[in-house]
Length: 135
Image (cartoon, rainbow, N blue to C red; front, side, top):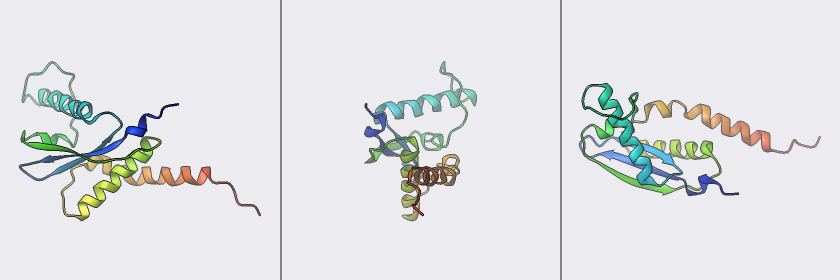
C-alpha cells in the first residue's frame, strides 16, 4: 500500500519586505500547495473588500501576512518522508522552533498553539504501541 506521506516536505514562505516567515508542511507537490495558499488569500481579500473575486470566501490564515506585500519567496526547507499527518506536523513545529532560535520571525501563530497537544498525542501513541513490561 502506498503512503501519501512518503513525499512529505517542510516549506517556507518569506516576505521579502518584512522578513517574516510562514512554515508549512505538505505531502502534495509544492506548487499545488502554494496555489491553495494563494486561492485562500484571494478569497480572504474578497471578504475584506480589497479585491473582487469569484473564489469561495475564506477566513484569515497566518500565511496571508506573507502575501500582503506581494513580494515573497517560497522554498523547500527539506524533504520529510513520514507515516502520517501527526509526524509531519511535529516536524513542522520543530522546524519553526529552530528558525525562531536563529532569530527569524515565524507567523504561524494559530498552528503553533496546537504544538503541545500534537506532541502529547505523539507521545501517547508511542506509549500505546509499546509492549507492556513483563512483571
